[in-house]
Amino acid sequence: MSKFSNLLRLLILLKSKKRMKTKELADNLGVSERMIRKYMDDLAEANVNIESIPGPTGGYELIGYDYLLNLNLSSEEAISLQIATTYLKEANNFDFKYQLESLNDKIKVINERYNQLDDYSDNIVIKPKSVNLDNENRFELTLQAACISKKKLKIKYNSISSGEKERIIHPYGLITRNNLKYLVAYCENRNKELTFKLIRITQVEMLNEKFDLPTSFSIKEFMKNHLGLFHDEDYNLKLLIKKPFSRSVSEGLYAENQVIKWVDEETIIFEGQMSGKTDIIRWILSMRTSVTVLEPENLKNQIKEELEKMLKII
Image (cartoon, rainbow, N blue to C red; front, side, top):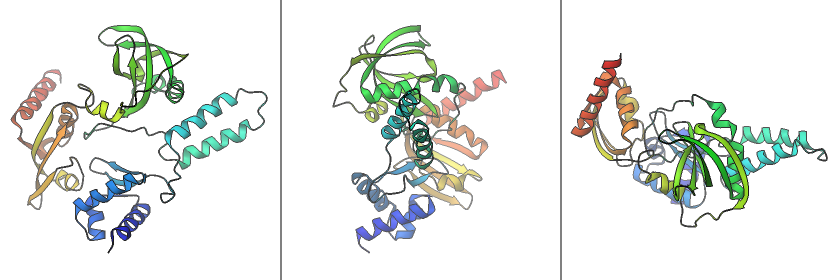
């Protein structure tokens, strides 16, 4: 079957089944898993929005409903509508404020990605909820508006290391990791790009002064190389995983170069390169006695140290 036919069949499969793993798609189309990943690259070049979701229940998912015409609502368009709705609700001379608010609510429902900003970490994560959603949501609309309009912000930020300080920043964009929201911005005080956790922002003022976003700047690349928060040492993992986790892990995509080998009907050897020590340790500990770390030795020692610390406080 031709490549074009396979691409159409792939889209139909994702449309009908919502989420499918690489192996499922490969089996249905009669091609290799490597070819499925090539198809995904081709579709991405055509602006067809297919999201790769990590984890045991993850897989590929088609975002939006009109994938052939690419009429999906972007996150910026949805946010712009929300901002307009907020401002026009207070206008006395706008007769259609209630209709606009109703339209905004409908679009929130239709556009499944409305409130899902990109998570640029390459790690397997257990996603907790923020302990203080009020602090996260308090300034989000203003921050989004500043990102879209390219206006500078004056904020007060409560840093763990230096306490609460006033800063002038150029907001580049909002991202999420582990369901916690962060603002990526250039900080005039520190003269470099930084990440600011929303729950630590205590005050926001949008300034009239605009800034230019550097054409060479990429949030995705910045976060991949941002030490300490989103990307750290790479680990070449080799794990022995038994039931009940062996089956679910074998069905998930945890690393681009992962290799799964079945030792017997209940046990697998997982191999793959992953980054993000904290998330890797959390993932391994979640499998409890069903997992044995075969490699690397330094990660095994780090997990032992973590367990020893836990035993001291239990």
